[in-house]
Every structure is written in structure tokens, then in C-alpha cells.
Length: 395
Length: 81
Image (cartoon, rainbow over all chains, first blue to last red; front, top):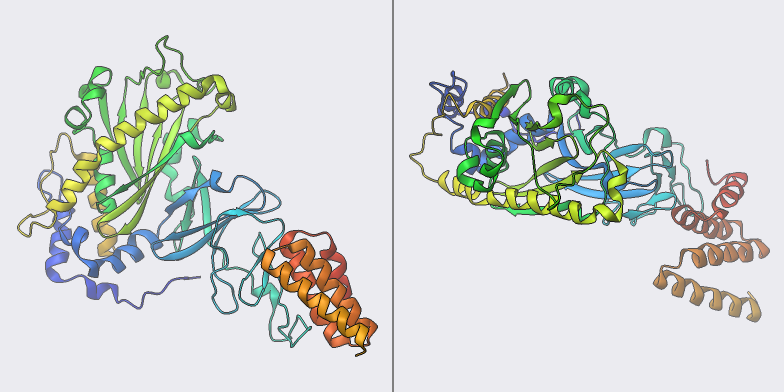
């Protein structure tokens, strides 16, 4: 089912000049330009991007731990869509449109735990946490809660296709994307050893950065290691540029390092690693952007995810959560290390803010042609630009 | 409606308003249930179904175990699926 119709004729949004600019992105990296300014500054392109990049793919909208317990509900507005994340009595996750099937009233406005049913605050139609319509009070007249014209079985909450991976909840908003396991097949295969339950162990392991930039610039910057020695000089002490390698694949790109050796304590104590992990991960770590909007990092002893929520053309909320493979890390003895780990990542991500905000400001320079790429260093970023350009062109 | 019934009704209405204002689900379930019983005692099946529906809705929302019995009563009266 197609759940979304913008009424926009997508082909009409691509002027010949824009189409040519996007075609230039698709050239080999040696001759390619970056995405044109319009992709970062032109409000008229937002509908096209929403439909072709986000709604027809698998967008990251939240974290599974936000509805950790049966009965938990979490309203999320994503690209203007009112969504509702729930965990039902059996522990299954669901994502619904957060609107009553009666008059379209918003159902849930605050996160919380519901003992049994979701009651619409307007006429009190009630839904189970798995979306089934439970009752329709007075729908057949006062005191009569049924009507032959209203088939409850077909009037449950509108449920979206969803998937969960590495603690992140993904949805396909228009119902047309391939299965998530196909969409993310190469990423899941690459990180098969990390495809196991992850644990969110406390509020110190989550934070949010509000950044004045288009969401795509956060992806572009995350993908490449070229900027590390300039923007993150602290990393040079143990993770030099030459220790990094590029990752370019179908639907994701990023970088890896062969020397993951953070110092979280003076005595060198570490978090317990995933048991049985291949030795290649003893000192390796990888960081990928799974297109379109989630940035992931895996290490032998923790992982993280950054969900990029496009708030507007030039404003992005970065929702960061750090996960551990071993529940033992919840122990109070690990609290200082958890805090140190979160502080370390926060420092790194905050160091990136000025560049993604600076590039957004730079995109208002009308004579800027999208820029050129270093064939040696910018492959992962060009891969993302290519992916965006192809989806915008509908090819 | 006699004087005593009127006073009972007024008390119930006041208690219902207070329970709504306080968001006291347990009280809403009990009070709407009492209103339904009172209407039934006066032979007013329509009003009884109306109040029982409200008791049922608030029981569903709050996870009150009375929900199942209220549902059964409404179903038996042909008011609920």
C-alpha cells in the first residue's frame, strides 16, 4: 500500500539544469562534481527528496530502547509524519501512523507506558498496542458501540513496515521498498558478527546534537577519513590517517580503522568484548553511513548509532546512542568508563559541527558547482552523492 | 425521579466531574459503573449502556481488570462486538 501521496509530479521538479548537475555527480570520481547547491538550499526539492530518498527507502526513525518494555509508546514526528512506536504485550515492536482511524486525531502526544489500550482523546476509539481496534464507543448511537458499516478488523491503526538492526528502528513509509534484509544485505553481511542483541545501559549513553546543516552534509562528513587529522587532531595520537581504509558498497559507505585503542581508564581497563569475535576486530573498528540517514560504528566492545533527523532544509537533529554487547557493563563499576566513552564520542561528534555547518553556509554561494572530489580520499563521500543523485533522478 | 434518587444522581455527577478533573481512572471506572447500575435499577437500559460504555473505555485505557466483565455485559446487551 502506498501510504503517502505528495501530489507532486516528481519529474516536473527536475529542470534540465538540475538533471545535468545530477548527471555530473554520477561521473567517475575523477571527473565528478558534488551534488548541486539546490540539494541543500532549494525548498522546492524537499518533496522530491522526501519521496525518493526517505519514503521509498528504509529511514531510521528511532531506537528500540525508547520502547523497552511491553506497553511502552513513543510518538515520533519524522519529516512531518506523525508516527507511533509501540511495544505490545508480547514484546513485539510496531510503528503506526499516530492518528485515529476515525477523524485523524493525533492519538499519543507523550512517551509513556500504557497499561492496556490506546484511547483516542477525541471520541475515545480504543486500540490495542498491536494496533487492533478494540472498541468504538457510541458509534451506533449512545450506548451502542458497534455499527454494521464499521468493520473493526479493517480499521486498526495503519501499520508501517519496520525493521530493527543494531538497536535502530527503520521504517519504509511508502510501502514500496524491498525487504530491509535485502535493502541492507551487504551491510548486514559485512557486520554479521555484530548482528546480535545490543544493550542500551543508561541515559549517560545517549545525547542529542542540534546542528544547523542539511542532513546530507552530516553523512558526507561521517563517511570519510580525509578530515580526521585536521578536524579531530586528538585521534592522531592513536589512530592516524594511514591507519584508515575506505568502505564503499551497495547502500552504504564509510571508513574503517586498524587501530582502535581508546584509553578509557588510566590502568587500561576495557569493556568486555563480544565473545568469539574474529581476531580482525581485536584492534579494528568500522564506521558506515547506511543510506539514507543513520551513521553506525562498531567496535569489539561497543557500538553506536547516530540517527539524522532532518528538521528542515538547514537544520538536523543528531540522535546518538551508544550500545554494549554485554549486559555486565550495566554494573556500577563500569559507570565511569561508560561516561568516559560517551564523553569521548561526544567530543568527536561536536568537533564535526563547525564543518557541517560551514559547508551548509557555503552552499549558499551561487557560483559553487558542487565541488570536486579527491579520487584517493573522497570515494565514500562520492558514493553517497552518487546514491542521492541516482535516487533523485529516479534511476 | 424521586428526591433521594435525584440527590444520589447529583452526588454521582459531582464525583464523576472530580474524577475526570483528577484523571482518576479507577474512580471513573467505578463511578460510571455505579451510574450504569443506578440507571438499570430505574429501568433505563439506554442510559445504563451509555454509562457502562464509559466505564469500559476507562477500564480498557487503565488496564482495570473490570474491562472484561464490562465488555461481557455490553456484549450481552447487544451493544458491543
